[in-house]
Length: 345
Image (tube, rainbow, N blue to C red):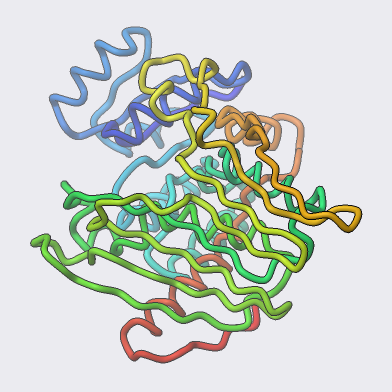
C-alpha cells in the first residue's frame, strides 16, 4: 500500500488528486498539506480520517508517507519537488511539470541521485477523445496523418494564479500542457522545428488570450495546438487529415464533471460528439460515426502504484517531460522573436 500526501488543496488538489488517489485500491490518502486555514478546514471536513498539516516540512518529516503529490502553482514545482526527492520521497507533480527545461532537468537529476520515482500528472493521455483519435489512426481510417489540429477555445478571463504569468507560465502552460503532451505521444517522429504566435487582448492579465503552436515533425506531419480564452465558439477538439481519410471529434472528454460529483465511472458522452470519419475503403468513399474509446483517469495513479510496488514502467517519465519542456522553450523563443526554432528531438 502506498501512503500518499497531497500538497495543495485548491481545485487540482481537491477535485483531481485527492479524489483519484482515493480511488486507487493500492493507495491511501494519508495526508493533505495546505497553508491556507480555510482549505485546511475544508480538507478536514472532506476527509475526517486524513492527516491535515500546514507545511511541506511536516510531510517530509513523516516516515509513513511513500509518495508526495504536488498540486501547487507551476512556479513552485521545481523547488518543492527537489526538496521532497532530496528527502527521499517519490514525487508526482501536477502538470505542467515546471516553467522550463532547465528546471525539469534539475528535477530529473534529483530523482536519479536519490533513486526515487518522479512523474507528472498527464491524466489526459486517458481522455476519450485522445484515445479515439489514436485508435482511428491505428485502425487505418486516416492513412498516414499529415495534419493534426487540437484546440481548446473558450471565452472568459482566467482567475487566480493561473492568470499571472510569473506563477503559471502563460496561456500555453495550463490546458496547452496536455495538448502538447498528447502531440508528442501521438506522432511517431522527432520534432524538427517549432513556431508559436501569442496574442494579448481584452483581459487585464499577462498570460495571453490566444496561442497557436505548430510542431513540425521530421516525418512531415504538422501538429497545430490552439488554446484561447477569447472565443465564443468552441473549435472541434481534434481535426486530423491523412492521405486516405479525415477525422473530426467535437466535445471535451466527459470525465471531469462526473469526477466533481464523485462518480467518475458514470461518465457518459453526448452521441453528437462521437468522432466523424471520412475515408476510403475497398475503392469506395465512406462516412462513419464511431463511438469513443472509454478511457479512465484512474489509469494514471494505477500506473504510479504499479511502478512503486511492482517495478512497472512509468507511463509518464522524466525524459518525456524534458522533451516536452524543450518544445515549450522553443515555442516561447519563437513567440518572442517571430522565428521558427529548429529542434530535432
